[in-house]
Image (cartoon, rainbow, N blue to C red; front, side, top):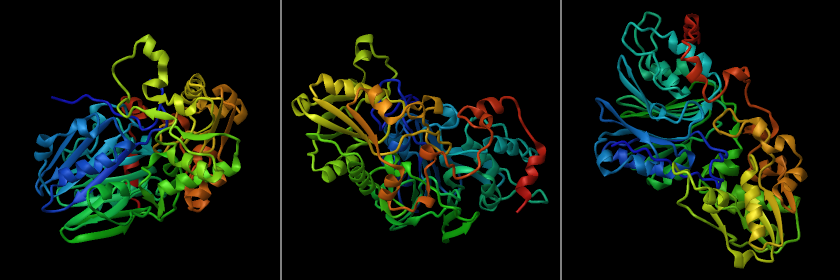
Length: 509
């Protein structure tokens, strides 16, 4: 019986409010003699924060690939029976949050396609910006060999899978997945950390900017690739290195080999350090938790205030709040209790419960905050509805003053590379100054960290980070606005858009 569950958000939001969400988590393993489906299950469990809408695992036994996927959390989709049915030595797993295509079963990953040589299963973390062009290339693929080009899914990932499955040489001979990849990947634009496989080989590839993280780990009898190093830890793999921007890795019985399909132009997402990644993950040699604590310290230096207690909006604001307390000398305390079991729900709250709003997820410790001047540290503000409700709740609980401090700069620009922010018109920082936002929230004061201080906290050079959501400087050219958007394929593909001449683009070196 299909599981139609829904998942926990890792940010504390009012019911119905959507905060910054990441595109997905990917995991792959090549390990003969191991229970690769179970290793992938636990790897995805470690990456659940990156996507809670659907989950899937594909496994190959050397002769065929089986895919099991459904809507819901990893723990809702899989059980002992389903995992036991996935026997093999190669696996690819995926936990999805949708940034292209609706949140429906057809768009769950890994995506699957038959090829002339077998089949391919693929998982993708990121978001592409030339989806319309890729749709035209898919429509122009040769159809005589029986490979379907009509896409049931409506996400950019399935387009890449179809292109990898359907390439032919100049004489019409079908290419293998490994032969097709260096032809296809240079034409894929945007953020992509890909983990994919055919019957015998595990592959991983990362976009030339390296916007989303992707790491390589070693098992005693195999290899692992994953979105974050924390996923290596949970399955007992030792960290080897990051998959480099513009690099493709292939792993099979002959070992690991690597090739480059594009020159590296590093622009890692700074928001991974602010919020998206797990605090126990390392990205580009820098621990995420230490970065967030340092952001809090620098925020305290830039925006000091006389107060009695520093509290965090749990859990994402906690490391920065600890740093703020250490630097300011103001004690850190737990002023809010989080209900870890409340996420999005299909059960609509009654009017009475709806009015309670944020209390479904957070409740104040009145004895701790009554009469206190509070510094409340959070990682970001999107629309401001959650912070507004939080400030009101703290005042009702007896706080004497509420000073809000944010460990990232104002979010003013949309992300096209895998973070599903609100639209630009909905971003509160676009129409208001920090003082105006603070007044709107009902806070006694509001301050953000500066962009330079945030970047310095990561220890990564500024020119190697994408800061577009903060400063509007995108790391690549973007198409016209009408060619971007979550529902693009659900409109463009339905109209049957195709350009046969586009197929020649893939024949050029």
